[in-house]
Length: 267
Image 1 (cartoon, helix red, strand yellow):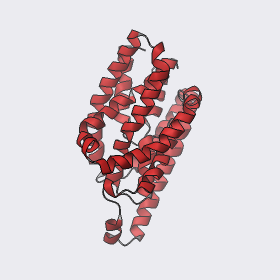
Image 2 (image 1 turned 90 degrees about the horizontal axis):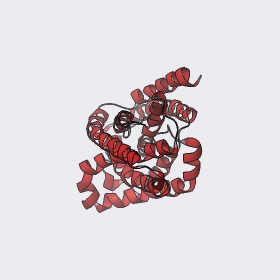
Image 3 (image 1 turned 90 degrees about the vertical axis):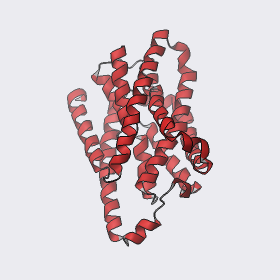
C-alpha cells in the first residue's frame, strides 16, 4: 500500500460510510481494483479507517453526545447486540469474510433488492394509511425511540458484520420498519456508529497493532484524516438528500455495482 492508495481508500470510506451501500464492501472492492494484496494489515486498515469517518459524526454531533443522556442511553442499548455478536464472531469475520469479494458482491446485490422492495412496500403502506394522522403517529425524535426498539435496531445493525450488508442500511431499514421517521433513524444511525466503530477499531488495534510498522501507522493516519474530511461533507449532503428522497436509487446502484464488478473481476 502507498500514500496514494491510502488517500483513495480514505475518500471511498468518507463517501460511503453513512450511505446505505456498505463502506466495508466498497473498501474491499476498491482494494481489488487497486490490486492491493489481501494482507492482514489491509484487513485492519479497512476496519480502522472507518473511525476517521466516525470522527466526523463526533465533530457534528458532539453536543448530542455529551449533553443528551436520554438519547445516549438508547444508543448504548442498541450497541449491546452488535458488541456481543462482533466479539463472538471477530475471528470468523476477519479470517473468512473481510477481503472476500464474492461475499461483498452477493451482499450488495441482495441488499439492493431488499432496499428497493422495502421502499416500494413502505410507499404502498403509507398510501393506504390515514395520511396526516399516520404521519403524526410516527416516532419523530430520538428521545421517543423505546429501549425495546433500540435493541431491535442494534440487532439489525449486527447484520453488517457481513461485508457488503451496510451498517447504515440495516439500521435505517430496521428503524423505518419500526415506524420511526426517516430523519430520526438516520441521525440515530449516525450516533450508533460512534460506539460501534470505536469498539471495532479498539478490538482490532489491540489484536493487530503490535505487528504494524511505523510506515503502516503513517498510512493509517493519512487514511483516517482523509476519510474524516470527506465524511464531513458526505453527512451534510446525505441529510439534505433524505428530506425529499427514498433509498431506491441506492438499491439500484448496489445491484449495478455488484453485477459490473462480478462480470469484470470475478467471472
